[in-house]
Image (cartoon, rainbow, N blue to C red; front, side, top):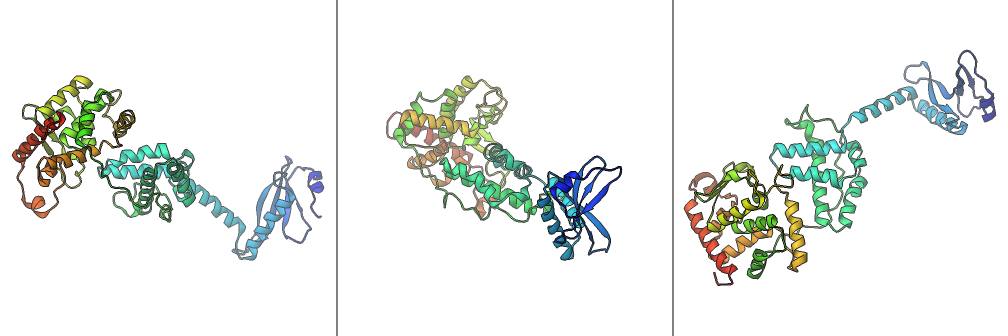
Length: 415
C-alpha cells in the first residue's frame, strides 16, 4: 500500500510487531513498523553492499518524524547503498565517533593543561592563563571539545575584549590560546605529556589565521620626571600599603612582582641586604642564583614603615585575608586611581623600574652597575662562564649614591 498519514494513523497495534511497506517505488524498502504498544517507526530495508545480508535501519518515530521527512531520510540511506556503503555500519560509526568525541578534551581542559605546562617550567604566566580562562572565555566554549573550536569561536572570545578598548589584552589572550592549541597538537609527541595528557583530537590550530588587534605592542617609554617623583613620594592620594609598595619599587629599582611577593625572611636588616631567591626571579630559567640587593637607611626606613602598616609575619604586602601576596593588578588599580585623582600623566607601576634606571643614570651610575643593581641577566660569555665576582661592594657604593641623590632630589636640590 502507498503510505499516507491517514494510513499510518489508522494502523492498529497487534500482539506482535508487524511492518507496513510503502508501495511508492521512489524509495525501495521504505516502510513503517508498528509495535504492540502502538509505537510507529519508519525504516528502510536493503541488501548490504558490504556483506550481502538483508538489513534494516530505523529512521525515526512517527509523528515526531513526519512521513515526508521519513521518505527523505530513506532516500539518503538508499543513496548510501547505491554508493556501495552500508547505512547500518555508517550509523554505528557515527555513534562511535560521537562517543569518542565526548571523551576528547574540552577547551577548558586544554587551557588547564597549558597552565600546568607553564607551571612545570616555572612560568609566572600560568596564573594569568588561569585567570583569563575563567574571566575572558565563555563557559559554553570552555565546555566544548577543543577540536571543535573554530576560527569564529576564537573571534567570539577576542572581539568583546578588543571592542571594550583592551587591544593589548586581546592580543595577550590570543597568544595564550594559540600556545594552548600548539601544546594540544604536540602533547602526544612530548615526553612530558605522552600518556598523561588527555586526547584533544586537534588537527589544526584555529588561532593561527586570527589577526592581532595591534600590529606591535608599544614598548614602554614612560619614566617619571623629578617633579613627578616628588609628587608621588609626598602624595596622600594612595592607600598606605600601595603607596609604600610603589616607593619601595622606586627606591630599590626591583621588579613589581619581586616586591609584592617579597617575604620578610629574605631581608637581613643588620647587614642591610635583601636576598631575592633564584626561584622568585624573572631570570630563574637562566640562572638559579639569588639576586643580592644592597640596602641603605632609606630602604630600612621604608621596611619599618611597611611592617608597621601591614603587620604580617611573613609577607610584606599581604592580600586581603593574609593568605597570599598582593596581586600585580591590585597595584595597577591603585595607580590608575592615583592618576585620575592627581592629574599626573598616565604611568604604570613597572615604569618606576625604568625611572630608577633612567634617573640613576643621570646621577652618574654606569649602565653595567645599574643592570647589576636591578638583577638583569648578564648574558655575555665573560659574565656567564668566567666572572664569579659578586660585585657586592660596587653595588653598595652605587646604591649609596642613588639614595643620597634621591634624597636631595626629593628636597628639590640638585643631586
